[in-house]
Length: 250
Image (cartoon, rainbow, N blue to C red):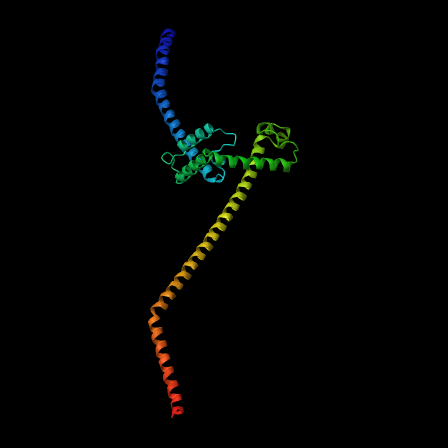
């Protein structure tokens, strides 16, 4: 009996286990793989929409903010980051309704940082923001230090670290960019106002010349009439004089 029981267990036990494994494990693996793909797609779609929102909310006057870079980035860094983000949030791949707007903003940021003159101007303004911050913090002698040296200083560490320091530099840069944009807009408005004033002056000069030309033309057109009127007046005056002097001659 013990032998048959043992034999029965040897046959049935492993056979039952294998059968169960063969029927459930492949199916379970397929379900897990499909679920993983679905979750991955959903996560990817969500991340794309989050990135679109980040770009839309980024400070538009600072292309570094839009590309999520700082001024130490090289041109290769900028091109690489732009390519990554443009592919990631491309309207064809992102269901976000404003993905095209974010794509255009991204392209403009890359274009501005690719123009040396514009980038140099922005970098100079960021350096000014950093200088002002150092002065406000009362860190004497720190402005002569390079960016990396400054960020590794005890003062920055005591402030809260590089991340906190960069956030402050970015905030100060934003203030300066806003001031610069306001001055630019005021200058543009003044220029447009001056252009409008000049245009009105030119219009008035043209109108004045036209009036003068019309008056001269009318004067010439009425010349014969004036001559006839004068002759008629002169003849009438002569007749009156003759009628008054006639009795004296008699």
